[in-house]
Image (cartoon, protein in one colour):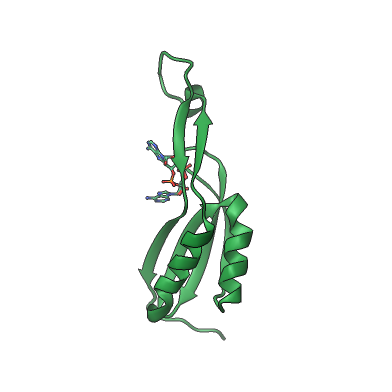
Length: 106
Ligand code: 2BA
């Protein structure tokens, strides 16, 4: 069994979760904050059998969109001598797949 941690955009989270559920995957959503932009995002925890991991990744990929965000460089605490905002591409989704030693529902 694997545990997937999927960091998705807040605006995509409901669609991703709904489509995971439709395909029979349970998920837990955590309200998280990106360390770089300090913007809210959602981290999904999804426990799944090994042979279904790719199916989960495909669903997340399908419903997670990439976005471009302009941020004032001052917000990042950078010592840049310019007023030009920085363009940052965020997403689709960042996914970690880790092994699960034991899984029980009691
Ligand atoms: P943030 O940390 O707020 O990062 C938002 C976006 O800013 C990133 O998009 C990336 O394009 C850019 N970025 C991040 N760190 C940077 C840096 N040191 N210098 C320049 N640009 C940087 P994504 O890569 O799509 O990441 C979206 C969110 O996924 C991240 O939000 C973070 O919450 C999470 N994430 C991404 N990679 C991670 C990792 N290796 N470990 C843990 N969380 C990660």
